[in-house]
Image (tube, rainbow, N blue to C red; front, side, top):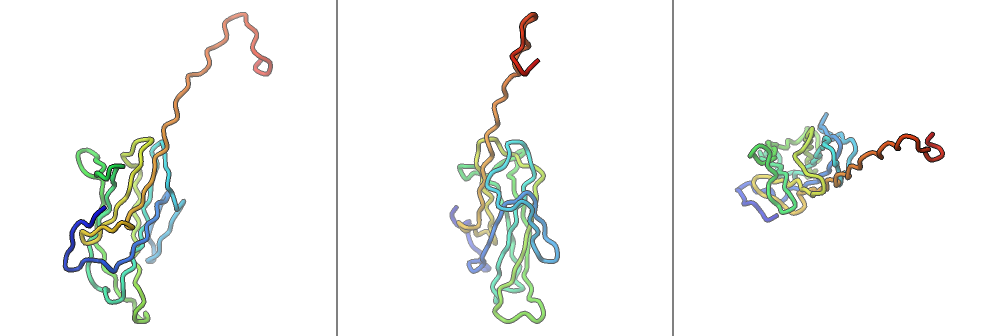
Length: 169
């Protein structure tokens, strides 16, 4: 995806790591990830977590940033739910902890868990992160939804008076 524009605080020096998981949460400034590394889900609805770690350079501490996470379909279009794009957004600002050695990058963990997503079996999707309206090619994570298994009707009952095969008696 191409850059979505820039602002005076364009985050060109920010580094991002993303991981899809069964669940993700942040506690004590650490990411807790359950079932991490997903690339395939479904086909039945299931929760999906997006774990994100943003590395902020030392000299970018105490600068407010806005982030946005968009769900895109195979063609790069926003996935819609009730006529609205599926996305979440927020704000972060990395502060320097007391005693941290100058020059040490600052870590900002984010975790978003969705109970279910409006995805279709057999299709692929991508979560695209943008920070301050800038999206980088490596600020994305894709996944595929398994195809639905065809349903096969149960075998019809044997006609009366026939002998079932051995082992099914």
